[in-house]
Length: 299
Figure 1 (cartoon, one colour):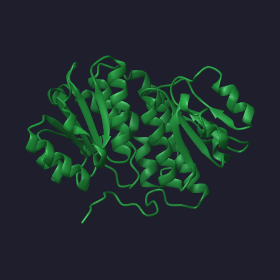
Figure 2 (cartoon, rainbow, N blue to C red):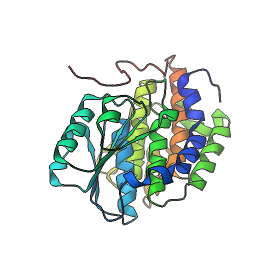
Figure 3 (cartoon, rainbow, N blue to C red):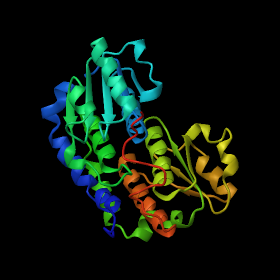
């Protein structure tokens, strides 16, 4: 895979990043939620979607009620035993406000941050610093996926297969990795359970990096309206399990149906490769998306 942009270089390190952070789990486990605790996650944009994926997986595994909130739309007053805050920059205004509220309330919390010395990193009750996966591209990839890998490993998941699958994705020729998706004029992403967060993140990545029309929905909700835009030249990409009959329905519209039987985290790396291809085809710099900055700081 060409390494001509920060985004391309950061995408390429992900499997090694995941393996490395999992090796650190014992040193940070005391700060992470325990089975049975009532937990909330807080983040903005990509960090919110990673929180959604973790929340869904934690509940799937029967480890306790877990809610995922955008920092600006939380309901922490419902009461939680522990809160997980995710913030690459550590400077996002809404996230800082949440951390201050958690401190004032005395609510146990831990923040996962990529940048030391920032308000979120300094003011949180506990901080897990992942500065080795910080990014120069505005578009988040490896910080987000490495955070999710750490959180999934904390649930007792073995990510050996996901790491191997991601390495295989990165070793593929670009044409094999993205296939018919390279020519699609629109992509809708679908998820089930914890992969709903992955689907939402996939759609966001394409919008950010390539100004590309992408949407995301729970797979069983797709028939309830969104299927109306399926047509020849468009695509539907499903992460995780696929509802019975859905692939045939999509094929019936003339749209392309995309699905691989791999861990959704590894499949997200394949989506990252599609982002590079779409940005290149559009003549865009994926490191500097239109109208976006590394952190949203409100004044």
